Length: 121
Image (cartoon, rainbow, N blue to C red; front, side, top):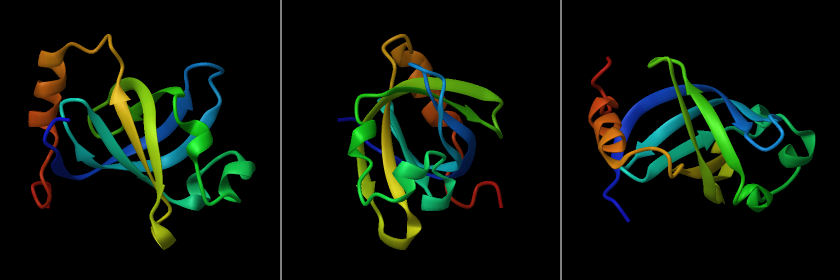
């Protein structure tokens, strides 16, 4: 497991399934990053399928291949959902590991480019 970096929240417009192109969530935020993946925060209201909004677990998403658009960086990233956690009234945290196609040097460069908390203020 790679060391994590807390980042200034980066807005993701949509989290979308690569299998059927169904939108899973909108308006997510990246809250932590590492050279292996990203940790997203998703509010319950921002989950698009109503069946997901009613659950206390998003474990049904684990293993799904997804892509996301990082609005501030105008960048699309793909990966696999590896775990989900209920984070109380804040909604859910979703961990996404980068897809195998993403070279290690690219992942490390992305880590360096993501702003630390307060850097954009």
